[in-house]
Length: 324
Length: 142
Image (cartoon, each protein chain N blue to C red):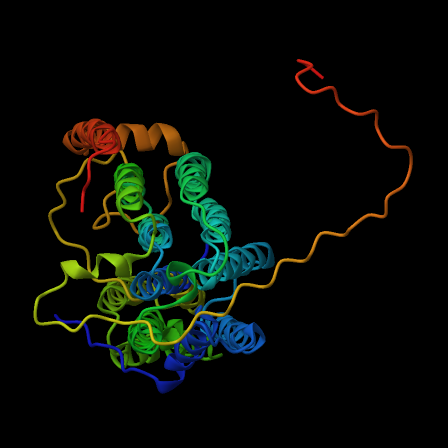
């Protein structure tokens, strides 16, 4: 069964176009317009995208939504600063800001080890090394490297198109309001299981969610057939209602494959579990996953680090020889 | 309940596209590599979001490998940047445009850069106070 591709909405393209227009105005060039216009456009795009996200999803607890929107807008602000700032040292500091906010998003997604590792490696090591190189290669005043851009209009147009398509696809694919009709059928005062079945059959796309709910509905129907009292019906309706509320969370998923070859250290496989939670001990479970499923990849990554170290030393040591 | 998947995918997509636009437009080698790292951040955010969405850690393991490869890339890139800077005395990528295909036109900078701001003259202080004692020529340490 193939999933029906979501239809693209023109409104979803708007924040991408506004944002990239702002970036185009902000990009360094000799006769740049005042930064105010680009900043205002970028801010409008950010607000619009945030409003669209908040409107078209399940309501979050306020702590999580506040943290998410703060970290996300900080990350995007830092990213825009990085690509529009003529001074590369300020760009490096903006990149550190991006890394810190993305690590906040990692924490919101239950990845504390990765957040700590990324802060230590990126913000601690990579950005500092970049700053060292910037100090080594420092120069004063305007330069071709910092105050000009290559093809800003074409690049921003391509970026706006790509980002608009990505936004529209993500939005169409994870639109939780597809299920609203089914939930309304379950919520109506004299609902029957047949109503829910009809509403479920009208659902386009969202194959995994549909199959799962249809399965639960079948079970409820056989149980109600065995015990046709109104109490039993109410109980089954409550169970289905809860299943739909949690189905809104994994809407847009493809049905998982039947055979999964990975171990269960990292969590129950997707084709068995319906209650999806990350393992409690993040570091311990991640270690088990890395040293069982990804043992070969860990060895290769270690080798890669060694080779990169040797290569870096070999490249940087060639002094005094003319390259050009 | 954690943050829905679509939210984080949106932020990841925006970070990736901003990194790509920066990589295409900027001319400073260091900024280019920072933009590449920005794209990697967007991808890592996607992987972590998928991990929490599916409830198993394989996405986080992938993101860990991304961080590893990014560290290798940063080391090599900085060594290369230093070498390139030593040979051309500038970080401008357009100085290396003679590596382009032979049938492509060279890009020339027509717009003139703004003149650097004139340095403010140092204030000239009025002579005040006593003259210091005259130095003895060849007198060794003073």
